[in-house]
Length: 452
Ligand SMILES: [Fe+2]
Image 1 (tube, rainbow, N blue to C red):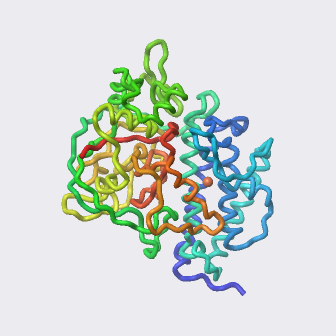
Image 2: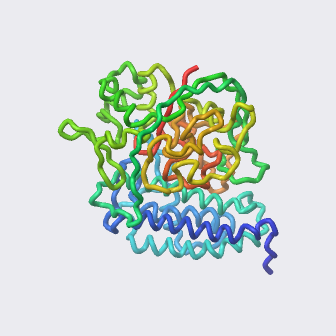
Image 3: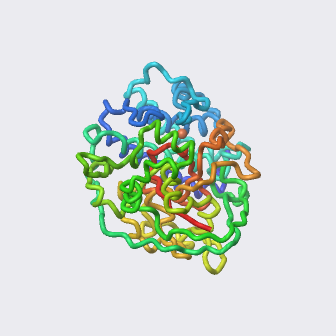
């Protein structure tokens, strides 16, 4: 006999159903940018083809919910395994964590979409089944498993977008609704002093709000006084670094970063082009003269950001400094978001796919932190120079995926905070930590500098 739905869960069921269908609609909108023939494309050598993600999103959901918690019999164990985990090789050595063997030929597009549809159907039933389940699994409680599946899909929507960014224009379809770009000037950055104080990183598990294992347990860090740029570095400001020739001077780079720059033959950020002596910027579906987008944040790798900071005699912030600048204010109190405690909305930042592009820096003053630091959340992730590492009381909690975060505590991945234009509003929470390698230049990541 089925158990009655637990009261705390009952209220969430409709919300989950709605969220699942809206996350799937956005995923479908992203894949609709690709003609079938391009699903096998691998625009970034370090990632699987787009088709992998068609299968990976449902496989992750099936494995976590229907497999690990409900223990349902699989209708396609081969796909559950094949698509269970992607790759994130060390870009310097090519070494990679464990992942399923890459097949000589990926399954067909039709089979993979059929698998996706079957899993989506099963998940709709699983929402009720988990509500009735008496499972003691931590992921079965408080709808955690569904939030995990939703957030996993949100994060991979961003993976897909930065892969799509690298695909040549003629291979992708421009959406009909594509909004207009904006190019207005940005204000001048100011120095903002943040006094010494405590910063809270991470979250408390017992508060019951969803978080990934790497967000727990919360920790308080003493942060000395520092001065931070009120605005992130724009294409215009970064151009001065490139144009002066300093980008190509070893003295500004860390040895390991210089090695990467030299091997990769990098002379400018990945989204810039130089043709017949003129500079251009490659957006998702259009090319612009670089000067048109001078007010947009520059998207660079951590290595390039560090070199720029060294050139101007500054450095990148730490994860704790980001928290001080974003979530505290002159009254010493912590707020839920930089702008206060009201939920994230479009006036606060360029996130949640509102426009499929960066916007001029400073165009959302309502999102400024209480110190007056702008654009901390939205318009590009904020690079920090803090290696991605577990908090002192970390423990992996995903039963069927114990190495979800642990494989990336390798000293080569660094924490990013905030959000980009391709980050779902649900991920805009202070405890959320993103991470990339210092030599991975494809993501929508911006930066600003600090001094002591
Ligand atoms: Fe994944």
